Image 1 (tube, rainbow, N blue to C red):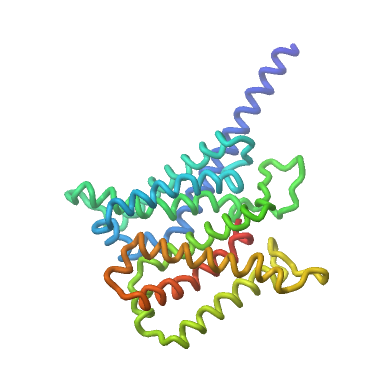
Image 2 (image 1 turned 135 degrees about the vertical axis):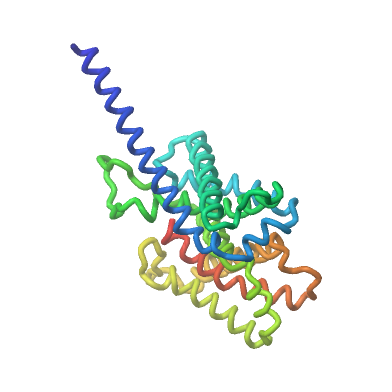
Length: 291
């Protein structure tokens, strides 16, 4: 009787784990669609899949793998306890990104029979990157938990990293995710040519103010409140300024990847980086709230 009861309990446990995993897959697909849909519907992203330099596309695809692994270790489909679990979740997220990209691009007529193979693969590949990140972000956004997790929770959300390197990594993820939405657009380059040095300084100041106020000065969930014992300059130097530098680096990489620099001079290139740095800085500041 004890053996039969144990077997029944094991079957029930496997069934429950399968149900939880299926729910995680559903959230992942929903997250890929919600977070990447603007890019699915952007003409510049379709064109990138056709003419984008394949070496830069390959670098982006390869870079996305460790980003997904580390991200899944913090916010995956389910609580991960080993790196093998994180790698599994990252692979699943990448697969969801590919499947969702293929389905949406085919349904809206972007992918059609008779198109060159390299064009089809390129369009799917470039869209799969933001879609895969969205699939992992879905767990923290669509799980429906209140954040008051206990040991009895069915699907507890992992807390973000408390170490400084982890904070910087999440900032980079947030900057990359939001920056990918606008980096391929022509407006980034157009604005870089329209802006004067005073406009550039205003964008830099606005980016820093938004970063500092969005997370560190305002008491948002997941933010860092400035206590009376902590000088404001300490938080600015330790988090806001490094976070903004991280956003600019991500901005420069995104523009280089999507071939938005071309043969431009130094000033238009720098201006474009700063312009894209505004949404990237907002994404970096919001990363601890989103993740």
